[in-house]
Length: 470
Image 1 (cartoon, rainbow, N blue to C red):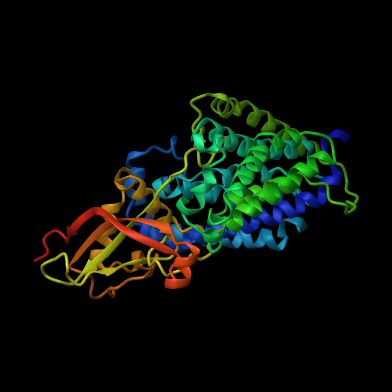
Image 2: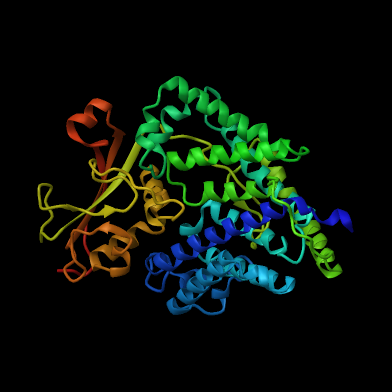
């Protein structure tokens, strides 16, 4: 079947596969370095406790059969190794069936991690990586040209990512319709980057232009992905430029980068494809069967996307094969941060020797300029942003975090930039306070050197100590 493949997209497939392999590597590295404190045997939300109450059919995972920190670490580092092999191009020298199996390994390993990751893995880009990774299994290698139907499904995924995000904005916060959301967003986003302060201080008329351009990119341009070339290439290129602009303005883990990767197979690069043999029949049958399954599973995400009660970032099947996406349906006008402090004083006093715990990514010290971490994902820092929005978001894990800090748990302290107490001499009491943060003005920055100004709001957690501690 000559229509089955599209040789002109050979280079686009290759670049996409390299980008996806790199993102897999980042995701597995993030899991390997952070899991013990978050979901390990002594983590804040331990996997063994989760799998004891959630059946396999609801959360398929290797760890449903057996869990240990050593096994999890082995899976995470194995995922890193396979991702590095794919990045190096090992799949290109394997038989087609073996290359497909190699691409299936990181998808299955990461699915096992996400399905037991609980709150820490509840972000939309986890499902987006899994859905993209599953499609990559059927994209083929150097033995065959890229299948048309898989290229279509990748565009369909990109369409849902962009169009869903555009709809949730228009239906959600009125500031998106008034073109005023960027007056606040760069200051109140979950984790600002090193340029976010400057983006915030751009002229307000330019913010209006940014929002209007975003609406066009998310609500109009996605339809052009299905237009003939070179229109589809132009649409994909515009989406890539928009995502790179977002990369500069904040830290959104790998959300922007995987969206860039999804746009690459829609680009027709000028390079000439090599001559290859026709794809084997078993491959054609398998790809068409999987495509039919994914189209059938798309009905629930489409219904959600078209509904006035649209929800963001929802998986409709436990394998995360077809999902719904969206971001920033509402924008906070005021930034709050939870600041955690400890003291070695036997009796905690308001004016006692309280020392602040410093996080790697989230704002703390007003003089410390934000760093660039994306595509690496600082999970605890992100959840601290949600905790500041409402204590309800912190309910499942915040008390466990405080307990680990009181114990001087080394794995938890490794998630922080700086702990004011060593592991062998932890604080006697921990408290948390809520502050309002705002960006300084140009004049304040010159006078104080601080990019933030913070004001005490209220007590978030009163002084707390370990149970049974004298």
